[in-house]
Structures are given as C-alpha cells and as structure tokens.
Image 1 (tube, helix red, strand yellow):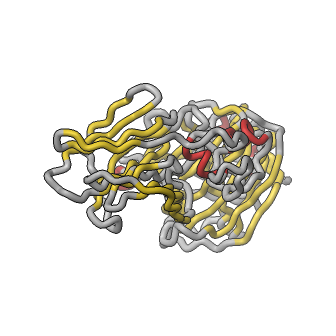
Image 2: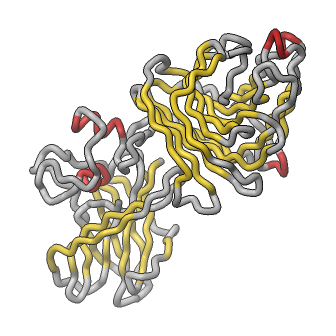
Length: 398
C-alpha cells in the first residue's frame, strides 16, 4: 500500500603540481560520502617531474553537480520550523495535527484521526518549503523516529501543486510502515499511482536517509541506513512528466485511506537543491545534458580521447567532448615562508586547504587565506619553517 488519502482507491582532476624530491605532476580522482551520496573510488595518475625545494601538492576532492539554484538545509537545531508552511488538509473539516521539535533538534509531525474518514480520507499532515523547483529537484531527509505499530506512510513530497483535501498533485517517495515497502508514486488529486517499489523492513532503532530526485521527468528514490550509509538499501528509478514544477516537503499520513487512526513520525536534516544525479554516475545531470545531449554516459569513459575521464572533466570544469579542453592547471609556489596553491575556479564550489607531511595523514587548515583572482583562485598558508610539506585543495559543492 502507498499513500492515498482518498478512499477507496573525484578529485580535481585538475592537473596539479606535486613538488617534491623528485616532484610529480599528478591527478587524483576521489569520490567520498558527502551529504547525500555513498560512493568511494580513488585512483592516482603520476605524470611528470619538476625540481623545486618545498613539497606542495594541489589535489582536489569534489563531488556533486554544477547546476545552480537555491540550496536549503535545515537541521532543526533551532527548535522551530521557521521558513516552513504547515499543511493540514483536513483543517477546514475540523481535522487537527501537532508539530513539535524533540530535543530542539528534529521535526515531529503528528496528524490526529480524521474527523470523517469515509468522507475526507485518513488523518494526514505535512510541511512544505516555499522554494519552487522547476524541472529538477534533489531532496533528502532523515527519518529518525516513527511509531512502528501504526499503519502509516511517511516520506517526501516533490513538485507540490494545489495542496488540500482531494486536490494535492505531486510526486511522493515514501515508506509504508505496515507493508514494509518503499514506494515512488504520483498523486493525482491525492490518489496515489504507484510507479515503483521495493520491500524493506526498517528497524525503528535506526535512522534512515530518504533521497528523492528528479530531472526532466527522470526520477530516482534511494534509501540508506545511517548506521552503514555507504550501502544503499534499495532504489527506484522511473520516468513521468506529469508535473514539472513546485515546492517540496515532507508528510505523514495514516496508512488506511478510510481509517480513523493517527500517524506519527519525526524527521531531521532536511536538504533540498536543484542539483541532481539521477543516474548515480557522479556527474551532474544538467552538465551531462549540456555536453552529451543525454544522461547515460559513463563516468570512467573518455569520450574525447584526451586522457581525462568524463568524471575528471566534470570535476575540473573542462569540455568532455573537446580533446583540446583539459581541466585547469594548478600552480604551487613558496615565497617569504608562505605556500600558495593556485587553481582554476569553478562556480558553485567552496575551496579549502589540507596539508600533510607524509601524504597519508591530512589536516584541514582553516587559517589558509583564500583569494578570488577572477578565473583563478588561490590558498596561502605559512609553511612554519617545515622543509617538507604537502598541500591539497579540497573543493565542495556550495
């Protein structure tokens, strides 16, 4: 059963200077768990040699698409839902719901029983963000508590239109507690049309992350157990173009369409973005469409034969269809006791510096000074008198 309210129905791949005795020019490809992804691959290509004195390396680790747009993050640690719009479709008919913030760091939604299940459907409530996404959405939220003895559906709503009793149109990625299944569905006037599912019995003592994303009609729902976030518990992939725009949010609904019971679930760590990767290849969907005309090119392919993979070119900001276009060059210099690493800037990223004396253990350097020099950026840090020091620049999605 799925929610239906109406009865009955890699590392930059920027070429980077590694200055040592002898120094090496190298590329690093690294994908790591970052927010809403669980992938880990690493490879290093050693390429050429130089002969300076201080060891300095520019390596970049970046994961995520470059599509620009509004990114919203709410961990509810402020103990409120400012910026959210509470939605109780049964309020006009006397239906009630409560909203709370357990420990001032999570978001509990608890709809009461429907005043008339036969006429208005089961008790249900949700909360929406005001940001409108068009053609693409990426929503993740943690399910951290729920009553496992209540038949209920809990999850994410995307491209919400005309919210209200019997009028809600949107897409849904949800967990059906009583059937032990994840569903990806479309709601047409609050009637659910299932477009895919998989069986999974969630442990109420664990926290889970639901990830729902869509790009130009291609949609994907993923589920992760946060005790082992590197392993997906299952995924649903489907295509539908009925709805293409709207805000997103979360919901809780009693699981029997004409039932009179309550529903109760608690969420945390909500994040929404237009940046998507529905084919899970590490490359942004919009970037793939812009360069290839479609999404389904492999990240480890080298389409233009220039020696850099598609993923490396995506991370580095170069054109994967032009062999003359390579990821931007990096420079390393030591002047007056300061190490400066320069690199080509790519929009939508934040850069930070890490250092090491052995290329094994890396330490963040928040005191490094970042400079935006237009097309290039740089990070500068005093060397502290060390004769051997490695540095790398880490780029993350804003």
